[in-house]
Image (cartoon, rainbow, N blue to C red):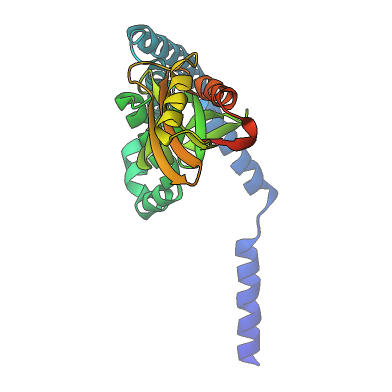
Length: 281
């Protein structure tokens, strides 16, 4: 019985000690309001400082754009954006110090620890694309307006951003290719040189000697508008079976697709269409 009474007494004392009266709540609210009013000047100063940071970031961005007006425009745009982001990061850390004087950015960075590694893995692809974008803009293996082939994508480069490269495909679609993929995979720069080579396969059934047929093919190609004389077109015999001779035609042009189409028409007109088979590529 004494044990039961002792337990009951202890439970009553615990309930009294844990009960929160109205006076405690009012006192807590007053203390929080007082702390907030104490920090109010810091908030006003922080707001003014953030306006200054916004203006300073704008000036830095415009200064970078003005200083790099003779450089690669996408590179200048990326550097201007990067400098603006850097100003904002430093400004936000400083603003946090103004609001909370005891705040130490170094302790926050040091306290990340393992979390920073996890964040690094989570944003690994973003960091890779960012660094690859800077390298592409700095090395300039191709420019906006060039025609490239990267992986399965082939077309004209519309823009080179920090994260991705925009390619306008020949089908009229737009491909947004991550910069890490563009930088690490082989790239075919189709507009690296003024002239490009086209290839045409032709099979002709003709009673004349194969050399005469070859000369006819060569003459038709040489007279085709858009085909360059230097390097000169080259007609190579690829096969001979009965009266059918097969030739591979190599031609150079600054407008390769148009010249190839005109050459197909010229070859069709030079021989009997019923006895001629022509394929491009």
